[in-house]
Image 1 (cartoon, one colour):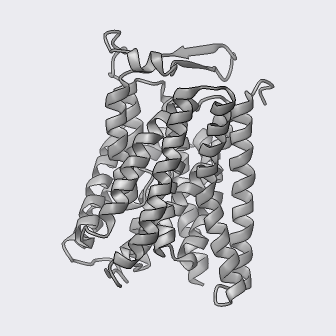
Image 2: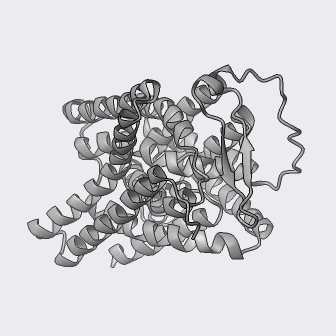
Length: 284
Length: 102
């Protein structure tokens, strides 16, 4: 019976994530710990598998529309996997209350990210040094969906992008999330990519980042098949459903609902960090 | 469907798509046999392993393509990603003994 509920929870989390173009990891850990009372380390192990499942299941349309910058993905993956490796070293050492606290912070930051932005980012400054991007042949293009016309784009500050990605990889390994919420703004700010390319490339990369830490957790025996199994199945179906919703649902309404849920979860996780349990079945 | 999907994109897409379904079938089969039986547990665990191996084999695929294109910079990049993941696996394996007992 629990298997079924785990499946449903992962389905909902991944469908909700997918509808905004991310993996559902950020919802999976709070759900597993707060609703199911699962140990946070086991929840993180299951969530990291869910992130891989979401990334792999939703890659196809992004690749077919040539929205993934494959070269850029490989370059940034060097940084994200290094970050993940650092995270793997740290997981054994950091106390559980720190994990809950960090999770609360990340949820808060995500909520802020989700607030409708007043697209005042401004034009990409031409002054940005493009040497790295030129040498690495990162500038690319993709076909516009309706007209099929090629849209060319340049890649901005690669070293800055790499350092942000290292941080995203570290957080991903520690908390079992895809940390798309950190990667997409990193790609916006540092690399100045078109939003579609950012989210497609980020979604593509989170699988590899998650695989780096997941393989360590798998070898260590931290991935509990009875939890990760149903969660992975729910995530695949959820990610596929979410990708369809992405087109249909009003993005603005969805964002507002998301902010509310994220803030609620942030408060809950913060209470857990302080050792106060409000939700039924919540235990460390 | 756009007719002109480049080969690299097509290969990566197929690898991830069909791989996902192999993993899904394995996990579902394992769960229906039952995790309390060694066979069911084994099949489900195999499915989880397939999920984890999918993005890693996607990097290996890109490495092979860069090798064929003799693109030295990108061969180094993709090989580094694989090397970092390999170190992570070793850390996980040997770290098991050092890890906190629950």
